[in-house]
Image (cartoon, rainbow, N blue to C red; front, side, top):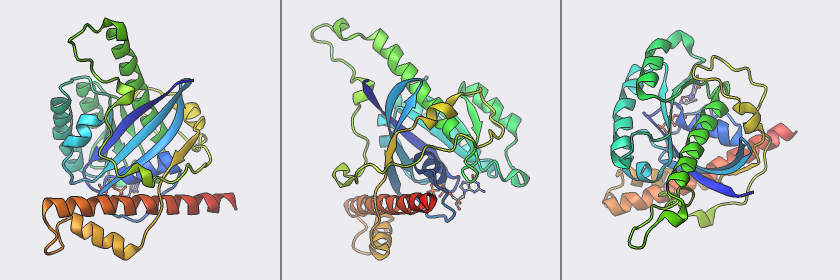
Length: 296
Ligand SMILES: Nc1nc2c(ncn2[C@@H]2O[C@H](COP(=O)(O)OP(=O)(O)OP(=O)(O)O)[C@@H](O)[C@H]2O)c(=O)[nH]1
């Protein structure tokens, strides 16, 4: 069976739960503490409707410039917190940027209202979120990373959209339809690498249990998606390991431009790259620990 590789980008304001959602989807773990992301990438293999799909998931920083991600990403999770009206409002601009940069008005996207377990603190009503999702013509899911509610559904819906678009595109541009002199668009499944950290540092796959297919479906608000079963066909995932905390913090500070004498764009980029490596390594460590805990 052929394996296609798709690039997913998780976008949204800082603190809305992008990392927690990604960690739940990829590693099946809950992260309580808040450690602002610089940039993390994850790899996961799943079956979607019988198709073997490799996902590269980029968890972005809430304050980052997203242009590069937007160019190479094929599907986008637009995440806000239901407890933060500003995080909801900020998505409109992000969506516009994606459409502008990709010069495409039908980019696969999913709107996610996260932290649905905090109903008492809700600041964005369901009808309001629904209205926007209808206006944007994309599905809306209310998720709780904490309770692992609707997490698989949202990711798998996005995968379906990407696969559909890939398929439509392949039909529109079959290989033999290209005439000499025409430069072909790159096949979607071989898209340019995202600005991910050095993959040569990637650890081997860690085999973990399938996502919890028995989690009650708490208020799936978009279309009904029979994706839990698909997600349960999940095969494996990779995350990367941990490095020294002090070095990690120093890399982060450098990336943020807080280290005197190391605050040029190049220094910051280098700090960011190192910090990304640190963070990824940490994820693996935590993932392994959690997996071990579960297997006891
Ligand atoms: N109650 C609740 N808290 C959540 C949920 N998801 C995330 N959080 C908490 O919200 C905080 C921020 O979560 P992150 O996943 O780090 O947020 P983020 O969007 O990745 O933040 P940045 O890295 O700054 O962009 C953490 O303290 C999480 O524990 C959720 O579904 N429910």
